[in-house]
Length: 103
Image 1: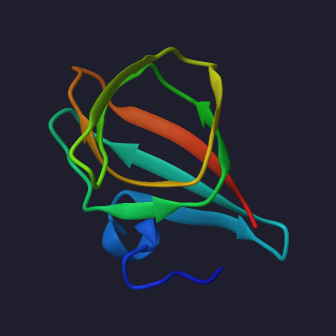
Image 2: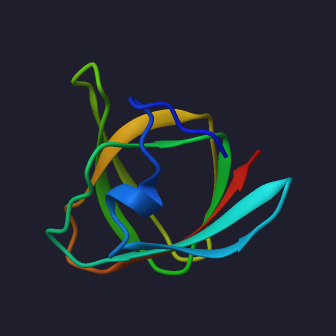
């Protein structure tokens, strides 16, 4: 996967929270874990599918300053278009997700 300087790989920016489960020529599967109050650095995701292993509440902040809060329930599956964001756990539970990034 090629990342430009303004499109940082989350495994590089937040290696304490993201880990690669498997990667091949078609997908990269990431596991993400954080605790209430944790925040990521700005990073990029290509189009992806997210599976929530836990319920959580997050705030996404985009490069243009827009903010979007999400309240995700355990077992939810979410499709997201490619984007750059900062993520912040604003709830009182850990965030545990599997992210399948498309190549």
